[in-house]
Amino acid sequence: MNQKIQRTSIHVNKKANFDYETIETLEAGVILHGWEVKALRGKSTNLKGSYVSLKNDSPVVIGWHITPYRQ
Image (cartoon, rainbow, N blue to C red; front, side, top):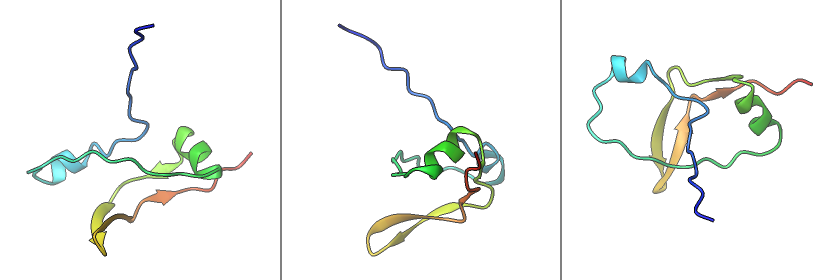
């Protein structure tokens, strides 16, 4: 049962690599609930201008817009 798990990103901020110099890259997960998951899979998000900041030693995403999912 050695199945390879293919990891893919659902949303990537491609422009960030052109606008900014990347000194260090970190990978993290985000917990999403209900409509947020459906909106992300439907490409109803915008990472333009978003960034991660540390608040009380915890990473917080600032400026990530997720359009509410519509059925």
